[in-house]
Image (cartoon, rainbow over all chains, first blue to last red):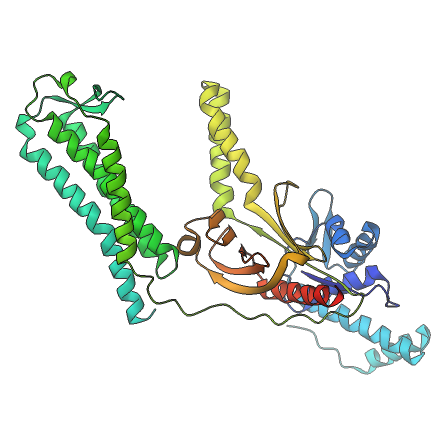
Length: 126
Length: 321
């Protein structure tokens, strides 16, 4: 697992750490069931606060990409299609970043996505 | 493997097998030829002054001696065979041939000193034979080393890892855990055996396996970390002992393929001339060259990423210093 963070970036460090793990799951570098290094060690390695790393891990848990268990640490969810889910989440993050750069309000972005959804044909997997 | 490589392997295996074959043939041949002239129980163990102090029946001695030679002969030949063309094979072949002589000599000698003896307690085996057998063993080992040429160097599997470009102020770290089931399983079994012996048998019998198992088990899981401090290899459960190479001492890193048996003669923390290895399996490994000219090898997956990051960190460290 490769972590790269830029403290001078406007993106919060916790989000940057989450993005590293999300990217590794998306491109298959990190396999389902793999254990992430303990937050304390990542914090020491990167020279950041433990709570910052934990915030990143909690973010990933909220997205359903990892499981946080007491005593077992952080483990990548062993569900089928976890890599696809990570790629989709990545795309959504990219979309939000782009919208912010354009100066779109949240409401404008949401209505754009909503319009797109209502016009796109629904295909159900067999 | 090339045709020349196959020839090297065959040559090394032959040089390992032949001394054991000769030793076995000599021992069994001499034993059977003088079988009727040997006493029923022959002297097989001798004290420091050369007097006999241990006795075994003729048949048991013959089976034990030939079994030992054939067993070790097979073991060393197989070890040389699986080492293939790697560097360690030459040493395995040399140690094997030396062992054949060091064991064959006293076994044959035991038969000779027992021949035509009525009372086995009067048999003498002077201590100077010890010096002879050790020297003969060393000489045979050295001869085998000389005869088994280095062989063609196998095609280099070293993958050059370009340095990862790190921007100023960027913090980067790589971490990966490797768990060796091949080590975890026997360590657990030995620990359980020790516990069982302590609980139900004489506790002294269980102490050694318990200590051995508990010492090995923590090192079945190893975490490899590359960060601003350099390379750290530590057990996943114990903070120490650990292998730490500070960034300043590292020259370059690369990803290589290793053969545990062939390159390091086994698994665990391996010490070789100018080479140290944390070897939990064969295959992909991170290789780090230090300023002292020593190479450290750690078997770990995704080692190309680790090497690239380490090279990037070293470059930035050198540029910043």
